[in-house]
Amino acid sequence: MVGISHLHPDHVSDLPAFLWLSHEVRKEPLKIFGPTGNDAAPDFATFLNRLFDEKSGAFPVLGSALGDSYGGGGVRPDIGRVVAGGVRLDVGVIDAAKAEPSLVFQREGTTVTAQRIPHGNMPTLAYRVQTGNVSVVFSSDQNGTDPKFVEFAKGANVLIMHLAVAPGTDVPLHATPAIVGRIAQEAGVGQLIVSHFGLFNLDAAVADLRKFYSGPLIVGADMQCTPVQ
Picture 1 (cartoon, rainbow, N blue to C red):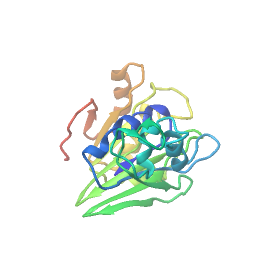
Picture 2 (picture 1 turned 45 degrees about the vertical axis):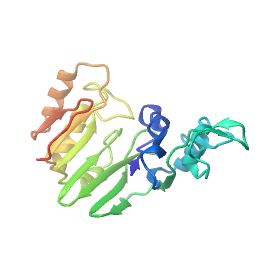
Picture 3 (picture 1 turned 60 degrees about the horizontal axis):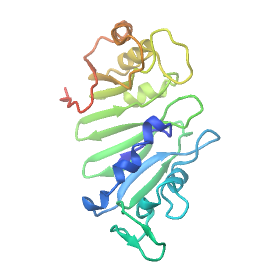
């Protein structure tokens, strides 16, 4: 499955490239989830239609992702246009206004739940993946003001949070390093991974985070593999 947190471009703009020619390596539909909408963003299903509709979408060559039966690539005779094909998507829209977690996915011992998180006026979801006795929580962007997220992340083996703003920054979108540290400490997670860095002194941000969090900490890097403690 694919879980989309929210529709800011730095979190979803790679989706067309990810799906490009995906039908060549996958035949069964791919489950994909994203949030409901509001005045700031459309709901996830509408967003996908705006991307992939075969007549009016931004990427009509990926119309098969929405159920176009053609797929397969080549020039489609009835529309006279090249259609590359993408694996068909099984789309789910998760209520980003709901206070309690939502069950998103359950299969062969793996369960995924989603929790709304505050990120300005943008509907945003965090995801918790539980497989066997191991759990990973993906926070995405949030400002850290909802105590329900601490409960959602409680006891996770790994918590991945964004370190997007400098210490002392007052913005409604992102948690400061101190707030990230406090959340990880209160949730009692096995280890914290930070990523999504802004343009600031990272060492200073980590030092500020460390004033509140005493557990194992990893500064994330592209393509990094992290053993679960």
